[in-house]
Amino acid sequence: MKVIPIIEAPERAAEIARILADGGLACFPVRGAYRIAADARSEDAVTRLMQSKRRAHNHPTLVLVANLAGARGIVDGTAWKTTRRLAERLWPGPLTLVLPPSDELPAKVRKVLSRATGKLGIRMPEDPLVSLILTNFGGPLLLSSANFEKKPGSSSAAAVRQRFVRAVDIWVDAGDVTPAAPSTIVEVTETSWTLLRDGAVPLADVERAAA
Image 1 (cartoon, helix red, strand yellow):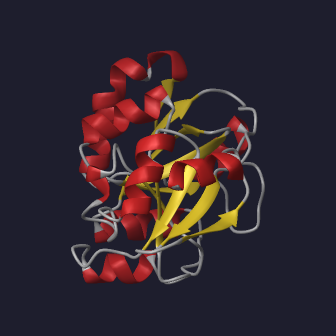
Image 2 (cartoon, rainbow, N blue to C red):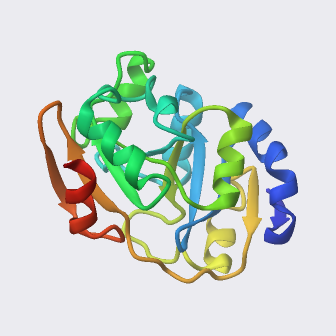
C-alpha cells in the first residue's frame, strides 16, 4: 500500500485518480471517517472493494459524483424536478439522494450495488480533496467505510492501516480523524420525496430546497 501524507494529497490527486481508473482501491478521509473508494462502473473494482472489507452485499450503497450530471449513468431520476432542486440548492454537502439505478450500469454492478434496497445513494461531497480526486478521476466512485462488518474503527488511522494494508493500493494518511454527523438521506421519486435519515442537513433546509 502506498501512503500519502494528507498535506501532500491535493497535489497528488491525479495519482490517486489514476490508481482508481486502473481498478485499484484508494482510502482517504471523508466526513470524519476513512472510506475506501473504487470505480463504481467497474465490476472488478466493485468486487475488490466488497472483498477487501468482508462486506455483505445487502448494505445500502453510496456513490460519490462530481455533480448531478455525473450521476446520469449511475442512477435514473436526475432530471426529476425534486432531484434537480435538492442538488442545485444543497450540493455540495452532506445530503445523500436515493434514486433508482440506471440501466447504463453493467448488469452485475447494478445487481450488487442495488441489492439491499433496489436503489442507490448518491452525493456530491463538499470536501476539497475528495472533490479534486473526483474531478481528476472523471467518473463516479463507490464509497464504503474503512472497517469490517460490524466493527468500529474507521476514524482510527492505526486500525485502518492494520486492516487494509494488503487490500488498498493507496492511502491518504490524515492521522486519527474526528467523527462528523452523518449525511441526511432523502429518497426521491418523480413526484415526491421521503426523509430516510436525519443528519447534517436539517429537515427544514430539505423542505425549503424541495419546495
